[in-house]
Length: 423
Image (cartoon, rainbow, N blue to C red; front, side, top):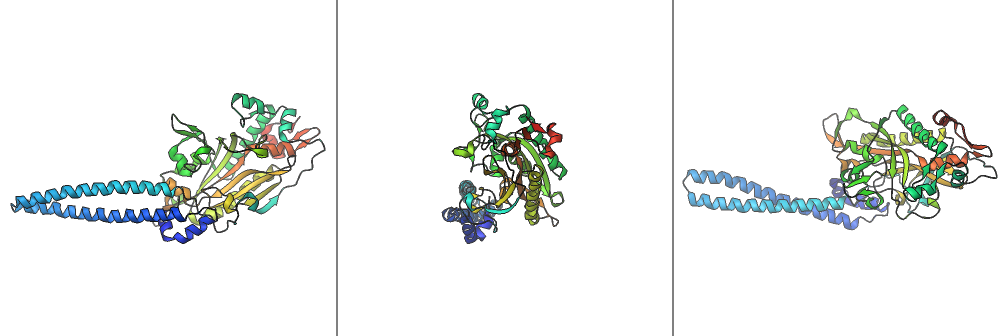
């Protein structure tokens, strides 16, 4: 979340920048400032009462030594009143602090100055493109038809077992899933990321720390008896490793990667975007996370974007990178680049990765800090990216590489799959 100090010292700027995300912060920020002023005034009252209490305590001792019992008793009664006043003020401060925090977590992160204006995905800017567009043969079909033809994915069986959005992968497609996971993890490790195997459920504090709670509570699967949440991405447990941690500057950057299954309710999703593998409730993904010095986080963001580009290049997929506009960005992001690959059979672009810099927004919620050379403690910057999400990668691989003889496997994946064609 935004720091209270930044909001109070840069109020007009904060409201103006939030407007780029189409968030009207005028009223909520006015409430924040009003509560903060009331909290400060209460603190002054509490400090004055405490000072008076200390003076009275000393005075009582002196009065007792002088034999002034009546004056001492009156002073004692006054101390009782002061203690009650201090307690009342303390309770009021605690309530104000909670209300203040409840308001702060409702304010999105500020977009970076390079974020384009716009409301919808159509307003995103294409940064660059790459790869070769495939030319399909006349009998080419979408991946959901290929899944039936080659007995690769059973969507109906998934409905029987769990419900829509929980496909069952079979045979060579199950092996392709495993191959992609290992391929992505190996590439991440070779690029200096430490592999983590995280839990698939997190507590509310972890969801709060990375900003899924309270913003996306309705999109997460909630195990109510234990008050645990199924993770929507490995970003949540991995980034929370550094919750309430003070690092040394020499430890930065920290680079972690993790494979996990991901669970998303996707409430309200409908239409062509949900066909086949296009939108699922459970899917596999390899994530990369970095904890970085604030002065280097945007350089790191560029490096992470370039790294994801190497993956789609190795998979021989046509791709493009989008700089997201303010209206299409996540609640917590300061700047996001989306990767899309082209699905030749569907004749549309499919999002397969988001790479984001959250600046200090998550770190402030997590209390993820580091000590610099002068021993001062400051908030770190957090970044993460999909490297990569599997469903739409699988869809594009199946569709773009289909031939009359079968589905060709990209050269880089053959050592992982153990086969070069699905037939």
